Structure formats: C-alpha cells, structure tokens
Image (tube, rainbow, N blue to C red; front, side, top):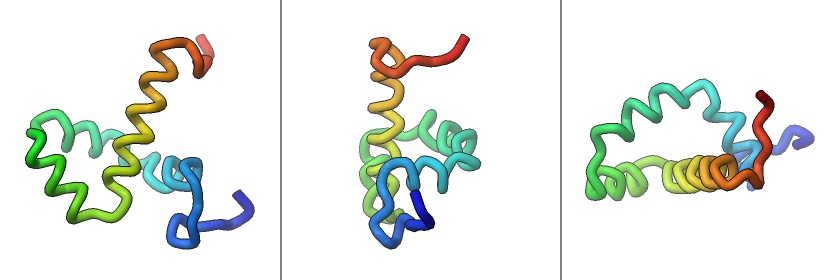
Length: 71
C-alpha cells in the first residue's frame, strides 16, 4: 500500500482497510434499505457503491471457495 490513500487513487485494499471499522454499521444500514435507498446512498457518499461492490465480490469469492477462509 505504501501510504497511498483512497483520495490518491488507492485500490480495493485501501478502501476495505479504511472502512473496516464501519462494517457493523454498514450491515445495519443495508438491512432495511430498498433499491431506491441504495441508489440515494451511492449518489450521496463517495465510494459507497465501490465499497458495496467490493463486499459483494468478497462474499461471492468466499461462497464459491475462490477466497480461502481460515477455519
């Protein structure tokens, strides 16, 4: 990562690390959201869509076994 921030074009790893502490809040926010709510959040908050897509890809990778998870 070498000190690259999200604002400086940091990749998915930087995004994930910058929001790791917010995962519980993110889940609480998503649970009651409708599609329209999600669209509004994506428009209002920088990187919200990118973060949601990253989490979706991670979940898919874990589910299909392409991302190993320690037991």
